[in-house]
Image 1: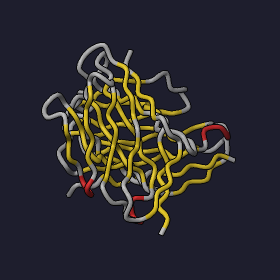
Image 2 (image 1 turned 60 degrees about the horizontal axis):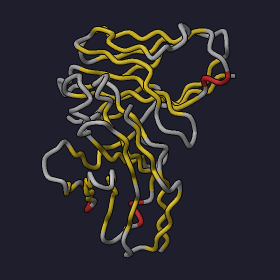
Image 3 (image 1 turned 45 degrees about the vertical axis):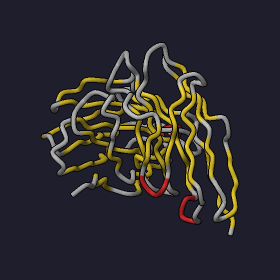
Image 4 (image 1 turned 90 degrees about the vertical axis):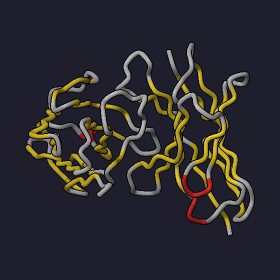
Length: 115
Length: 114
C-alpha cells in the first residue's frame, strides 16, 4: 500500500464553521506533512510532524490546528477561516524526517472553499 | 539560502517530440534536487531525485535529469512526449538548514499536442 488517503475530497464551509481534514497512510512512514496550494502556485509547507510530534509550524494562523493522533493519521482542524484560506490542502508522508530523503508521498488533496 | 528557478512557466510540445523543462538551482553546498509532477486535480508524485550519486538520474515514465554543477542546472528531459505527460512539473531543492523542508520552484506547465 503506497497511498496517502485524504478526506473529504471537497469541503465547503462558512467562516463560522468548524471542520476537519483527515489524512491516513499505512506505509509505516514516521513523518507527515500538511501543505497548502493555491491555484497555479507551488505547494506551501504548513506543518511537519516527525514521530508524532510537531516539528515545524510555518507561522500558520491559529485558525488551523494540526493533530497527529498516531503515526498513521494526521488531522487538520479548521475554525473561523477566511475566504482567502480557500485552497487545495495536501497531505504527504515520508519514511523519516529529513528532507534529504526527499521522497514525499502525497495524497490527492482536499479542496476547501470558504464562503 | 537555497532556491530553484524554473525558467519556463509553460512549455508546449507535440506528441512524440522531445521534452526539456529547465531548472537552475542556487546552493552553497551540494544540494539534493528533485522533480515532482502534478496532474490536474491530483497530488504530487516524485519523478526522480539527485542526492550526490550519479549525475544522470533516471526516473519514472521515461524521464531523466542531469545534474550539472558548473551550470547549476538540473534540467528534466524525455526523448518522446506522450499525451499523458501533460501536467505541472516542479523542480525542488531540499533546505539544508532545515532538512524537513522542501523548497519548490514556481512550476512549469507542460502541454502536449497531438
